[in-house]
Length: 305
Image (cartoon, rainbow, N blue to C red; front, side, top):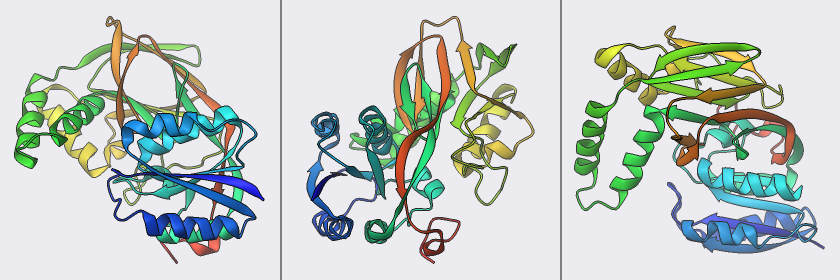
């Protein structure tokens, strides 16, 4: 029998007792003719667990976690040419929603038995893979404040205080965006790039039109001043920023973003990472093989039918 490796992030946003979930996955992959090896890991051990997988030794990588965890797993799956399966254990679960995976982790695990394999595009920024999107400006700074506040004894009060301080200090960024032979100089609070275009819908504003168009969606905010920043923050919180006419939209295959700064904080599938500038974005068509449930098993919002 072939081998499947199952990696579950113990600290993922919605992770409860993971042992029963691991057993459910084992039963599902056994139906596919595979033997599962399950590892429940702390976030700082995720890289080591993924690095221990070698080419040719595994047919399927099943990963439970949020979008950041899935990004790390997808990068390894692309590198090794193995198939990825997703168990949504995060807060946003944008990738799982786009794939049509049930948002209940146990239902997602059960769906693996009859799942089919498709090839989807991934994005990359300075060589690092992302599945949904990457952003600079206010978005990664908000993410960094959230991360730093998790260990704070004050909990939500400290988060609100630290977020308010960050917003008061925030200034628009001067940048140049180059794409499709065009160069645009901008003053902005946010630039975002998605692997395929985001859908212009109030119901599912962060969902993508397709996972197989072979394009990047490019967005930058033109909001002005403190009031504009506050309006953008409200839209970021609701997920509706892509519907605002003050957000410019383009489709392209490659983007270069440059600023006067030598490095930039980048939110890559929700995780803040510091990267050297300029930032070079590209799409890698059909780079990732991933399991998805039969279409009739899930509704459009990714929940059980």
